[in-house]
Length: 416
DNA sequence: CCTCCACCGGAACGTGAGGAGT
DNA sequence: ACTCCTCACGTTCCGGTGGAGG
Image (cartoon, rainbow, N blue to C red; front, side, top):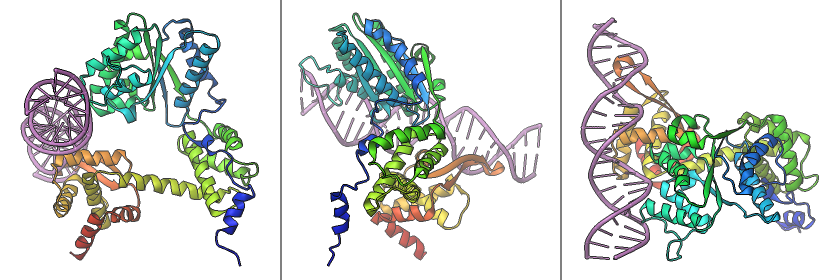
């Protein structure tokens, strides 16, 4: 008699595994070569080149949508720069890499920089998370840099998110960093700013722009052919021979990602998920069906994830929109939404926020892509936001139902 | 053409958590 | 124990506004 998992495990034993090395599909993976990005690499390389001779390179701004290879190119070039310096016995430039979307604030950006170049407090301890005046950290960083003549190249990934937070705050950080050069005796800082917002420049303080935007490098989206090329390169690394059903699989992944503005990260993610689906099902090859299914899985997962991690107040607001939408309302306006929200907040016994705040929460939900809003005028009847659910009612319902408190309210509302 | 609604969205400020130094 | 930081999250106040209806 056959035991349940026999077949599945047999496949692993027989070496029919689908993946050879799935890390090659991860977004942080830096491959040996970066196809279709020669121009950008050469540009950045020639700008940073002087660092090898101890001369400060110009600052660079890189633009391009998500998944166009900005980050990986920056990493690649810096890696090459450092290893070249080591090979030729030159004083290697310092490098630091900060993702501004995750790090976020002036203080924390400085802390990250300090950590990455081993700058420490005067007593030798690590710079603390918080608590110190920001100026003090600047000093720590400056002292470290000045203690040893060096060139620090800082990559600020997703710089635009700094500016979107608090007006002024982000500019302060960038201004502070660019200005630091004037205060340093022996060392220089050069900045590579990476932005996926093309309008980023407009938000930038002119003083910052003039120094930060000395050089600009544009990353255009990959087209379907280029995506295919990239996928083929990675497939060879990540999958076992013959694990991919037919050429149609790669073409499909390329085509789907090309629709998503040529996002290579998304393409790789899709491919990896498709592979995992095939693996889990015990199939020998990845087929186009796996790819299509993977697309759905990814979409569902990201929505589920964002909704689940929402703060309670935002959930309540989203829930209010969901309730109104379930009643068959096509157009939901801020006022009604706020009324429903107030009831929900009361039932949940959480604080009822002001309409001003709720209005902001609605905008946040919009940015997360869970709802669509547009400001419209109803003439005599005022100006307001028109709100629509951007995802299916069913899906939101299922996820919100997971929250016991909300599902109880849903039942109450139904019995009305 | 003008009015005036119902909100938008900027600005300034308050609170309290989390942490450091003294 | 007390002062001094940053920062997330809210509140209060208020000037601004597109367009239906008079």
